[in-house]
Image (cartoon, rainbow, N blue to C red; front, top):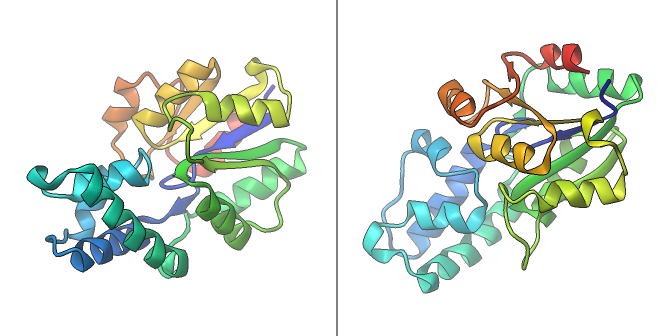
Length: 215
């Protein structure tokens, strides 16, 4: 029996790829670098903003200075354009409601910067009883470091065998394994089913409703 479900955000709860891609392309354009087709962005995201901006830069331009320049433009744009195209995946609102009705605690663990995570959750899922909403904070390691999961467990103490961690990437599966909790990899997100399997997902989920069977 699970009593706490921890969700990744991008590619798991929300399809945010267009807004992320447009923000990164805005930053690249402002700094004079070539932009990318939005369809390429699923392979760039997943390890936080810094890593995203490093990946979209030309190889020879991947300096800390350039990444920081891009970051300022990215944050400026994304903070006011993060809900233009983003939307919950089909079945997610119903899943969250069903979990809440069963008394299951809900939490979010994302590599997106913390302020944006809180803003997006409050915008798209304001009526759920989140016990923790955690994004990346300066000075902390990004996933797959399991610290973010441990922070959630400090806020809402739960035996590890009662925790289910849900995400769409190998990073998420590694995070769950390092934290010592059960994982579920979803196939509707940004990464492939092969990536989930290669990172030892405990469960593979094709539709949000299937998650109820794991509870």
